[in-house]
Amino acid sequence: MLNRVVLVGRLTKDPDLRYTPNGVAVANFTIACNRPFTNQQGQREADFINCVTWRRQAENLANYMGKGSLIGVDGRIQTRSFDNQEGQRVFMTEVMAESIQFLESKGGSTGGQPNAQGSQGYNQNQNQPSQANQNQFNQNNNNQNNQGNNDGGNPFQDSGEPIDISDDDLPF
Image (tube, rainbow, N blue to C red; front, side, top):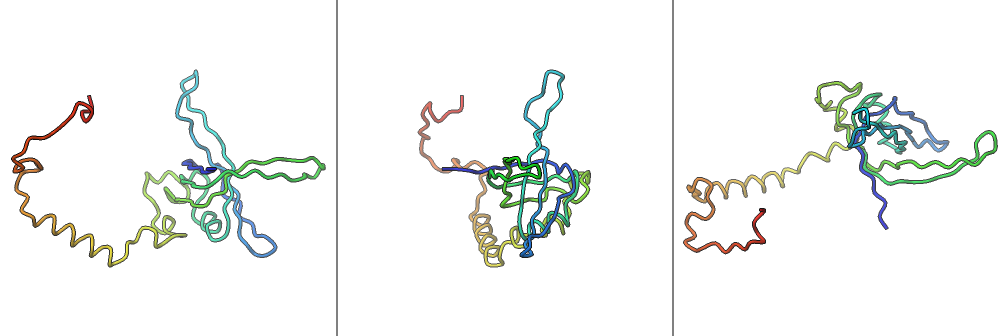
């Protein structure tokens, strides 16, 4: 079975950061995601989706993101139930956010410029390739550039053989 959710939207309010009796951080937040179509009045409607995240990710979300911030969420749908103060059984469906990407800085409306500290706040090594990988990539790139490729970008210039293309290979 597959239970996977990927969302991009804006926080509707500041995340609600709390701690369990054992000291584990938990943040509840709601994101507004625009629907891909417009209604009869030509306006886009939005879905408001409740989400939860735990531990360090919850703390970083509360510290670096606020109302209106654009975020990406990767997680799963979870349903739970509890008895409210009136003794009624309440069922909730929410997204358990396993990964959150900060797509802009706290406060939003920054013209798409991500806050470097906020973007790397909870997963600093994610976008930093190791030195070994960088050297390996650069060596491969240099080898390709030194192969004397003077054909102006035509990969078939010196092959001397006819190209076998069937009608199924053509995009039209």
